[in-house]
Length: 268
Figure 1 (cartoon, helix red, strand yellow):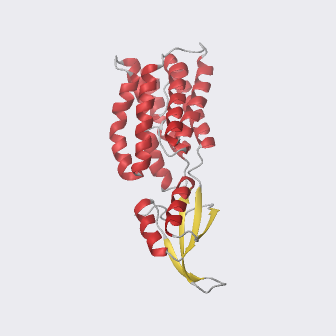
Figure 2 (cartoon, helix red, strand yellow):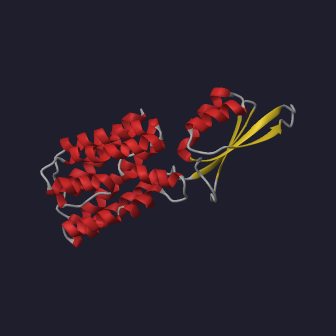
Figure 3 (spheres, one colour):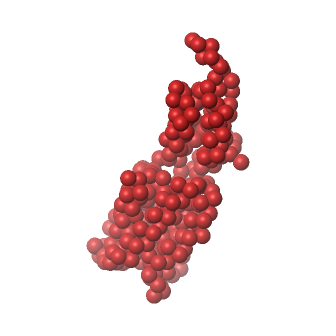
């Protein structure tokens, strides 16, 4: 089901590109924006360029973000590249401003869906998620900041008017992305269990976070228990709960919002 949503998100992004952005020379964010640029000024297909440019970052994502998110990203990159090749680059409107606005919003919806269901659209998304995991900065804000160079390239290659439209489109994509994708929000999880060691080992092997463990005992049974505390992002909670339930069906899990993290957020 998640893979189908990732594919659907890729279709939405390709629709935004080929029907709003590409026909007017407006670039999108990240690697796909560079692919659009090269597709406009060279005879190479945008979809093929998107695939080739993303391959090195997919390798990086495998080692830094894990197997599951990299597989979903690969699905996204392949499907997005295919949709970019299949859909004709035909403008729905001749109004460049409207194309910038709707291209940015629709593209942000597609990317937001992809990120929400444990994937990335490749490219700078991978770098943004890696930085967001170890900081309090949202993915949308990071992507907007890193894409300033795309705006400069757009101005140098085309016109500064097009560069401003590109900036508007990228900004709207980032705002829409943050509206849908809230996984940069930090949560604290407290796990009270009698299987602390087994859970600790699997958490450290599977989750990109540290774990703090304290000893306690049940107030009613006086049974000795371990209390595991982790600060995580929202998307990690489901995987953590699955790991805990695998080892201890009776574990007590308390999840609450974290306002700020000061110190090492990711495990070494």
